[in-house]
Length: 229
Image (cartoon, rainbow, N blue to C red):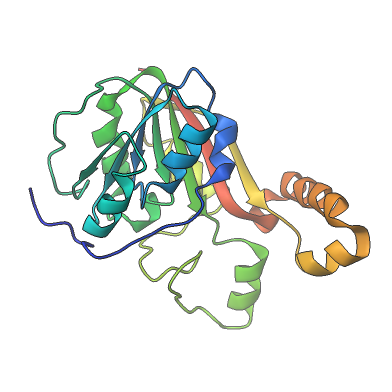
């Protein structure tokens, strides 16, 4: 095995709850590519205890965390290494949660993993939206600066919008058919709106704004596709 490129990196959070809307109890086996410290897999298993989650990470530090939270985890560079034999050959779900934007050739990685997905299986993708209002404003002011996390993460190699994400990541893959493309996000000045109208009304306004103009108010792009061939 080649040494992982980011052997000391550690990405950990509370798990990505946005993707739970795409998962149900029939999804018994999930391959989480770019699983980080295993937090999203742990969250999925807390909701669906019978679901088996296998993680892939290129970080040794993340692997040490994820192996304690997931059913199984492997530490490889998914772009350079040959995948080892996995417990399951026909997963119900492949998840790419905030990982494709970090890869040199994300389409090649999707196609590399598709043989591990059953016909009719789901591909779940989450990405940051570069066209969110906050970053439009920054660019309009002449500011384009990388950060240690978020949409402008300095390790991002690709940037996507609500409209280009399916065009660049799903349409070039003939085995996939997109089912849903939506966003999570909301209006500016959320804390001010909370005080003015209350949190429940603000949440309703956030949802309506994301439906009305997902490319402007969406912070995170969420896509669900099915493997058709």
